[in-house]
Each structure stands twice: as structure tokens, then as C-alpha cells.
Length: 343
Image (cartoon, rainbow, N blue to C red; front, side):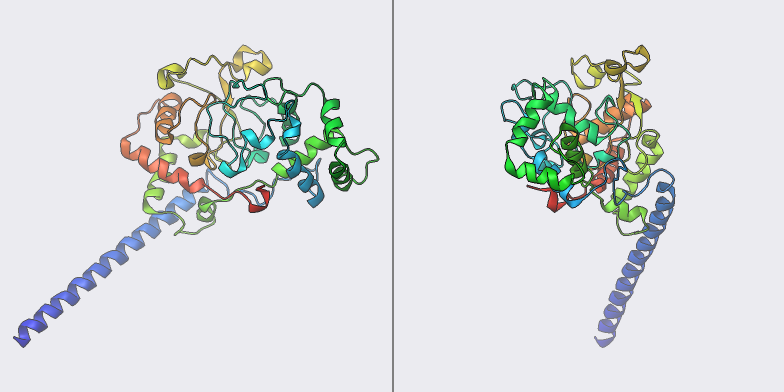
């Protein structure tokens, strides 16, 4: 009996030891895989910068505070129904999760409102790149009849100048100016605030060498993302936001989405036929939270969008497992909205 017990105990110890050895081997394999992918990923991507600076618009606490107040102020729209945050809600990752956003007149726009998070790092602003930076962009929607619909810059500033608190805040933000309550300074203040809206994520830790930052499924997704060719457009610190690309290269938008929206992309700005169907490549930062997708917000599901983009841009059909893995990887790009930016 004793020998039987001893034998059973020994067998159990061997089994436990073998299990631990397998786990150790699996962990070692996973670390080697992570090491390899860290090296490979750093050929295509960069960690998110700690700052998004503009030498023409230096950041100060006073300017950022003014920009935050303006960002949340409905008085920037004609009927005082909308602020910047209405379409770019910071509590929902800088979007409103609508296909297209209604303007001050209640009518929906024609393009999906992109996230304001990390937007200061984009090479140009808007889907068609019509503004050079967030400072220039900040004034556009205020004056756009389809958006905030203000009749003139003078009306905007008269409203703000009637508020003694704003008079003090503009003076503090632009102390070198005799008459600081101007439309240009309004744009610069909002732009300064938006330059603080950076959202580092787990993927940044991975790029910096943290082998435990991603799970095995997420590592598989990163490998599939690179191997499939997604990095042709989605690269750099933002995994996008740094070039124009024609969409779709293969097939038609209606074929993939059922959407009847007729949008010529950047051609609307340049009037150049060569720019037909060119759009700024979206950043993949926080992409899992910024649905719906594409320029007209015609697709709500991330997995469906991954499938569409592979077919439309790369002429490739992904397997269901590849789509699952890539979606898992993209979720590692979700960061946190800076707490001090929330109202």
C-alpha cells in the first residue's frame, strides 16, 4: 500500500513538473515571439509622442484653460445648441458615435466626425485635408453653415466679449496683446487645448520593449496586421493620419457598404480630378471606440470594417481568424482621455 501511495505521489509530482515545464516553454516561446515582433513593429510604428507642440502657438496653462472653456461652450453655435464637444465628445473618445453629425440647424452633415484625440499630430485636418492644423481647423465648424452656423466672426467675438470671465481669460492667455479677444486667439486657444488630448496605450509600452504588454492573441493580430500589408497606409505614431489614399482601390463603396453617399473626397477641395476619392488615412488610435467607420460612417462594426478595408485597399480576403486577431490587436491602441480634459 505504501509503495502504491509513493508511486502515485511520484507520478503526480512528475505530472506537475511536466506541466510547469510546458508552461515555462510556452512562456519562453511567447517572449521570443514578442521580441521578434517588437523589432519588426518598430520598423513601421513609433510610440505616441509625449507632446504635440506648435512653435507658432506655444502652450501655456492659461491658453489651455481658455481653450477648454471654449471647447465646451454652446455659444459658439448660432442657436446655442452645440459646442465642439457635441460632435467630438471627450467622454466617448472624441466622437459622437453617429454616422454623420447634425448641425446647429438639426440637419445631418455628409461626413463622419473623426475623433479629436491625437488629431494635433495629423499631417492635415479633416477627411479632405483642407486645414493645415488644429488651430486652423478650430474656426472652420464655427463658421460652417452646415455645422455651428455662426453668421460672422464678429458675432462670435461679440458674444464672448460680453462675458467678463472670457475677457479675463483671453487677457491671461494672450498677455502681450492689447485687444486679445479675437477670432484668431479663439482658434489658437482651442487648438492649444486639443494639443493636450494625447492618449498613449498598451501598444506604446510594447514598442518600448515591454514583452508582456500584449497577449498572444494580440501578438497574432499585430503579425497579421503587418503581414497582410495594412502598414502600407497605417504606420507611424498614429498608425495613419499621415497621408492621403484612394478609397476604394478595388470595387465600389456601395458594393461593400450599401451606402449611396456620393463623395469625391479631396477633389471637393482641390477641384482636381486626380484627387477624386482621395481621403486622409484615419489613425487607428482608439479605433475600437470611435465607431461608426469610413468617411460616411456607413459601417458600425470594427470586424466588418477590417474585412472591407482588406478587400477594398489590398484586394485580399482575410480569414475569420485573421479578422479576430487584427481586431484584438487594434484594441491595444485604446488609451485614456486625459482626466483634466473632461468637463
